[in-house]
Amino acid sequence: MPRRIGVLLFRNVQALDVVGPTDAFAAAASAAAGGRRVPSYEVFTVAASSKVVVSESGVALKPRHTFDSCPEMDTLLIPGGCGIRDPRVSRKLAPWIARQAARTRRVAAICTGTFGLAATGLLRNRRVTTHWRYAQDLAARYPELQVDANALYLKDGRFYTSAGITSGIDLALALIEEDCGRAVSLQVARELVVYLRRAGGQAQYSEPLEFEARSIDRLAELSRWIVTNLHRRITLDALARRASLGPRQVSRRFRATFGTTPADFVESLRMKEAQRRLVVSEASIKRVAISLGYRSSHVFRRAFERHFGVSPGAYRERFGGLPSGA
Image (cartoon, one colour):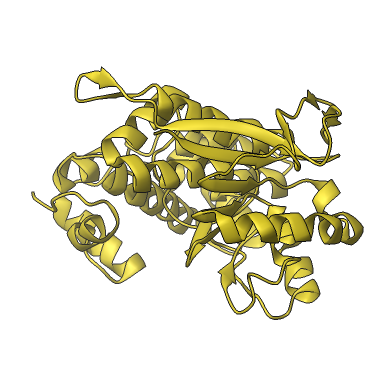
């Protein structure tokens, strides 16, 4: 039987929190397994009434079920949005969420949907996450929670929480992998053209984006170039030429703006990308090293161990489920 997944709707819901995971489960439902198509999920929306719900962005969403007609479900998804961050709304929804939580196998809150789930009291003393912008507010409003502002998603018992917006897709892929196996979740990731498992935590302003957000001069263009040229030999002179500055000027501006050297910035980006490739790729460690601009796997291993305290092979075995060979 297909697993029923109910997605809660309310006024001023974050639309992507609804449609992102929904599309992931829909892709899993039609994924090929063993040469045949397996209907894994039946996804539906549910709201207090049958009236159209208008999201934060103005997208209109029509509930398929009301609270009164809602069928039994395997999983309840609680999306975020400014609506559910309103204490009056979260308190009103909390009794229904609590009743459903008692009848379902698992409950997942996406982005600031954690506020709605927290209002039930079911997350007391549990580790949770939410959108980085609202993590402090969540911790202040619910001091009994253990809020991790950096995680992309967390599981504590049968309760799941995720970070901001697109990380709802990360969480959906994790749930699909739990239910259907890694092959199906990988197929869904390919269908959606997303990473199966993003390396690192929620620092949702990644180094390149933070670099551009904080730099309004010609250095900003360098971040985009560095990210797409990690396989090259990136020297201070090369960066200076691209910025039309002298090497000393580039170094001074890097230190003044970001508190780090250009070399350390480049290596940090390479290490982040190395984490991702070790998890989602079966390429040998030597090939990963070369693809990131290291002249040998030995130099790459030393850099990786210096950053993370483990070897690339051990990291892959721990987080990727792949052999550490080569």
